[in-house]
Length: 487
Ligand SMILES: [Zn+2]
Image (cartoon, rainbow, N blue to C red):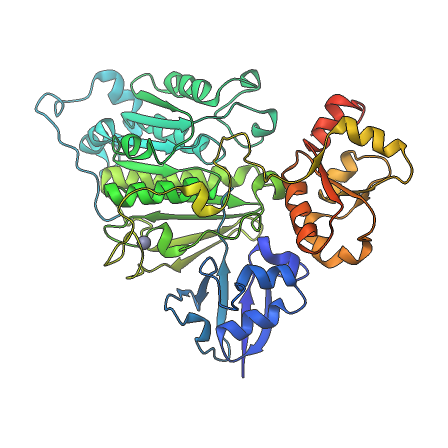
């Protein structure tokens, strides 16, 4: 029996009383995880399938090296070992893209451009040749949100000649805390339109191409095929796998970044020279098991930090300078301000970039991830619901249904429904004893995403009379009681 340390990402710290690491005695990796999961049923389910096997969606590193073998669960551990779980976060190579310069293009830059890019021209590693490379480069940014905003601004400022942007959403006031591409006057406007206008204003020398709508299996190869480098700033697993697979099939680098609360991840996937996203995360996590930034929050500056790391990697790839993040996963902890690097290896059996690939075309990604398509009407999980109007009537009747608020204490303090009881969703599995299975239960959150997950969890646990408030507190405030503050 060895004494080892398990390092815990913030997304799983609800199972460690907030601790960043814990010590366990075990002889194998599987035993160590099992010991931690004792008494935490949902953690147990997250780690192990119904057959008791360690899930492929759990990415493990022992002493900073990724465990890849099929029997990794039985890997022996030793005194002082450090086992690390790297979570899939939904809510972003050695071969630089070839840029062929014609004789005319190779001539000197215009005086205007010389002045605009003078700080680049002073760098011997960039210089005139590098600036021309940037001018002829084509970079695609998937998602103009927290990661895409800073990345797009810096790539446009740097003079990347053609920037493609893919986006389907509109600017919401809650975006402005981190999505620095937009202004208050852009609220309710399409992000694609406002983002493109801002980039063109920043640098009229470049071309901004807009690709409206979500990236889908039907359009991904066509869109990504037009670019040299792809920067993934998406916020959901289907798009992550789609971008990865399209990049591997087309032989393009996928500059990845993701953020959650105070933590970020960044790397470069390139199936030609290193691991891909599927090498790091062969399977998506079970639907609903991973909180999003909309649910868990994110420090506004963090996507800025990670998006700029992505922009840095994209520019290095364009310029063909430096050492890229291929095969290296950078973990950023903003609270400790700690940067760590883990070594990610290519899986020989990877279904898309391995030695015998089985995926030769794009697949149905929402189905693969077990979720609704991004941008579709039913991107929230479909569960039994009650409308705000019907709930208002039910609350006046006797007996009243039990009202459960599954948001966080900070959100509860801003405003909540009268007579409700606060049980944050992450605490629900541990506090289920406070509920009576006979009573009618109505669960609500801000917009209906978390309450849908909570309803599913409670139904799995045998509660049959449980529904969610459709549209969450937002709908209640809009249609029943406008005096409750919203955020
Ligand atoms: Zn792979």
